[in-house]
Amino acid sequence: MGQRRAYLHVGLDDGSGDVLAGALGDHEHALLDLRVRRPHDTAATFRAVLDVLGTHAEWGFDADEVDGAWDDLVRRARKGRDTIVLSEPVLAGAAADRAKAVVDSLDGFDVHAVVTARPPEPWARSGGPARDLTEVLPRWADAVGAADRVHVLLGDPDATWRSLGRVAGFGTTSLRIGPPTSMPVRAVDPSLAAAWREVLGSSSYDVVGDPDSLSDGPLPADLLDATARALADARHEVERLRHRTTDLEARLGKVERKRRKLKRRLAELG
Image (cartoon, rainbow, N blue to C red; front, top):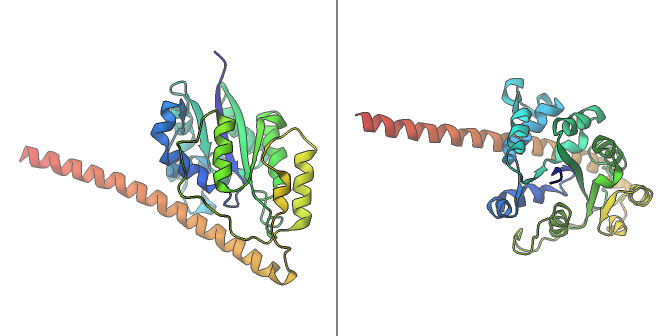
């Protein structure tokens, strides 16, 4: 028997892959029947990634809230014989040494990186290393050991979910992600779109989808640049707060379950 495979959906951190984490959770039990498993739920996966990347502080977490979370995720991943699929777009911004540490911690697995992308908005170039395909792809190709172990999924959310299934070896015909989704109209940076198409065409990345789709959208207006940058910053802050809220809700749920259990035990003793 060959090595078990682990597919790490690492971004881009632009909202293009948000649907994948949700779909993996929604279809968790059906995927188990297909021998595909996510090692932890979304909130715990996020804490684990902050742990391994060392970025907990910028997301509003204390060190003791994430300490050991990545090791716990890896222990869970090693159980059984299923293919592992993990989705956390924050990984797109991982520094080269941190990306390598993620892959090295999964020794014994055949590790592949999955990158989702849609047409680049004007602020993608200035939005940091998590939003520019030309930076993310070589960094993760180096981490996993070869460009053809990086799978680039292009298209709308429905297409990327189907593509993930083809790449990771599971069918999605009966695993729907809800009503058909339409992508909002986006201003596109034409020079960045051209750079992305060039990097996809000049290397052996496994590209699923049409690179020409990266150019779809109206040309950006210079007038919008400042607003675009402000919106990018605001979106990052909203995302940070969303993750924090999800984590706190998950913890509150655990506390509430423990409280009810203790209450039942006290009632039985009384």
